[in-house]
Image (cartoon, rainbow over all chains, first blue to last red):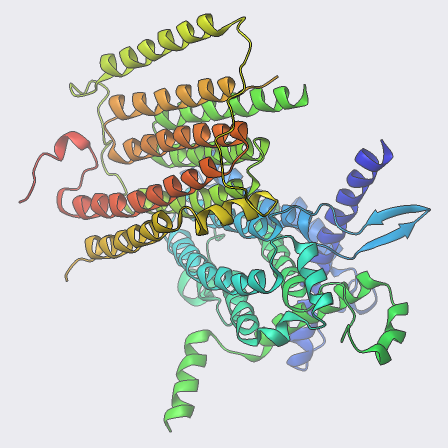
Length: 321
Length: 172
Length: 100
């Protein structure tokens, strides 16, 4: 009873809540890091060093008026934010945060479940998330959101192919689709797959930047041309759901990258015996550290690089001149 | 017991959403019900132990094909309703007549088969598959016994891709 | 106890809904979606028999069906778009010309 029902439900609750808290603080982190990159201070007012800013934001978004445009398709308009949020959350069902640990005299696995087709599950669930964007644009019954949603979904679908093909290289190396087995395969081959498949890792990083509509691929949210993107007509809590879904997707992408390419819960250089002092650190900490570094890299890119067209033209100019 | 509940729930959802797909006026809503229908079909595959196929179903159908439909419906922004209710070409009688015939047939089969013990079919003599696990088995079959159909399917997809590009291009 | 008979009934019902859709609706996009329903009904049967016979051949065929469905959707929707560009309609009864 405890093993089959209580522990899984506890795990799901913990992972869901931790994800939501992480998502809100991700927003704060992004604002802070970009501010530091531009030698500003960022949010400082709410709490010490602005640490309670996410709470203030959440309260603000919740008490704002929730507007539905008159000509909007009401059901679809309401469903779209939910459709984009849910896939980003249920992906965590198969992400392994660590191996088995002893907790209060019980063997507890640090993942919710380990299905045989874990990686395919992640890819397919992520591919459902595109509906949120398309439907938001359609249901708003407004020109700019529609154009933005077509842009965003076209970008999502086209980069999804590249990202999925890089996953094939990992599957071939590990010989399994299960996320836990992929980490174990990296353990037994003594190498993170980022070192074995650097090209695939690079393509995955670039592709996932594009899939999360992040700078330098944020054409779908170009504020100058499209007045803000597919969620222009949304306000209040429904807008907040889109906003959170975007950051939740970033966290998903970084956890997937950590698991597939950066060795999941393994410590750095898992084969070097000299570094076995590092084993005192619990394995899930390594997972969190790696994911955090990946997220930081995303923000860093956004603070540093202009939009992709400019980057490409810049590279072309540098190469040609 | 749990399996039966799951089956009846999923089956009811599949049939209900399928009816909504063909009866809804708004085409976009129809496409959405189609997605839900496919998701429940994927759930049915999981129930049957075909996890790999379930993932493929969601990835290809829900994530690929139906997005295509949605794009087309949004591009084909209808200024006038595409069909009148009193369209003389609606084959309503024929359609429901065929449905009724099949229902009668199903009822006959059900009547005939009630009370008879279910005879398990002798498993078709398959070459021993040296792997275990759903994904591995399907992969093994695809790359050994069904290699040529697999390659032909990939050719078909290539031809379809080229054909779609040619059709959708305004000027060649 | 759920046997493959149950799955066959479900599959037949889904197939019939697809057929009714093809017969009754005149919007060609809906007709295409009904055809997808029919293909799914076939797939349910294949997978149910695959589970009953304890081998994966039915699932392999279901994968082929999905591949064919993808090809069909791509080409079919391309035709619909090309047609709509010329005649501004998706009513199948107005598609009565082989060329113009």
